[in-house]
Figure (cartoon, helix red, strand yellow):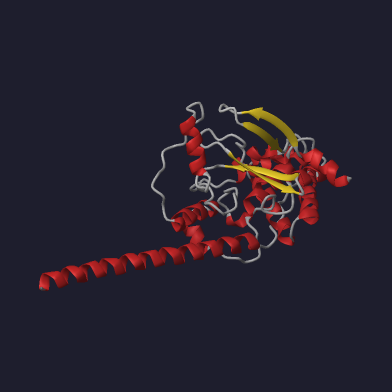
Length: 305
């Protein structure tokens, strides 16, 4: 019966009616931050109106939401908007850019700009040097958070996770020590770092088997690890260009703009997407050149006649 207990722990049933009197059985997870950034579940401009549900033998085992824009159900949302003006209307459809352009813009935001995307490699990162901390109490505080991060990495993630988590902790420490020396608790700070770095690398469900609640329980936290995520993001996030929303069929990764906080596995995946998008871009450019050449030859032939 453990699986039943886990299901009841993870899902809550909320039954309501929408403004068109359509019956809605809305299942959601208490830990809603599994599928959004620090502003989840509400985006003022683009609400997450599309909900997916997974059933096995008629039993609901998973549920998540995403934006309906850019999916094959967007036309349905627009029909609903047209039926009832009480619904929030979608923004006018902008001319669709080539998918390769959307992917390249997104990747540039993830790593901190086009130059970093050009130089991106998949070399395994080395562990950072520990900072020299003379005060015994401060050193103990730092070691406590570091030990918690090492414990999470060993319990849930691959070997290089420990390295990027330690790099993130060092960045947080170098920013002013406050999140390490004066946190709500050491597990609270460790949870926020795990959330930010994990979201940047796609370590959590639905892109991996680990759930954020697993890390929360491991750290004995009463609140979701995302609750400490915002101050960590402000510390870790580069001031370069922000990433656009993830293109359809790509994971919703958190843009920190720091390749040094991405594992070799994550960077290798980004390199593959980059190269694939560039091949598509070059093919599109060659097609335009050939079309222009054919049109020019056609005009010259008519003029000659």
